[in-house]
Length: 181
Image 1 (tube, helix red, strand yellow):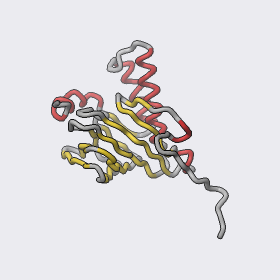
Image 2 (tube, helix red, strand yellow):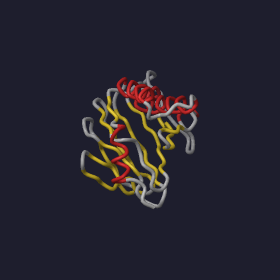
Image 3 (cartoon, helix red, strand yellow):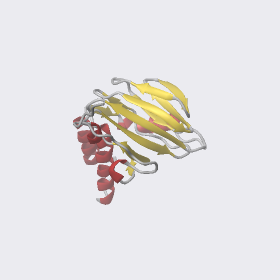
Image 4 (cartoon, one colour):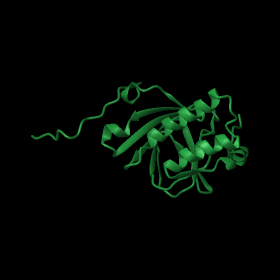
């Protein structure tokens, strides 16, 4: 048997994040990076996300260079795919190819948890880390996150990862699909 010394095994223990990194607050969503892009020589990363009952996910958005695979661990996640919605129960998988406007949320009265997997060369888990830090910085500055100068900072980050976030659609999206306890 031969081994390939150029590749290392990546392992993250239960209840831990990759490289013992802290949990992230990404737009109010608890996110833990489970396999970091750097651990796979730039081939893959994945995160575990938790949503409280009736919690919204991110604004509708589109990735131009990234495919996503979701595996729902607990509860049910509702996904918007273009103009269609689909409920993904625990044990279900959902593939979101690049080029499709999408978002997700927990529209139920029980917590939900899912794994989002990012195959390919884009380090999307790192984008989520940067987004969490940017949101925290804007909050620490006492700035309005919806002010034009804050939006410009978010959009600059989004552009570096070649995706668009439709922040302006969030109020209508929340009114249509939002929390209904």
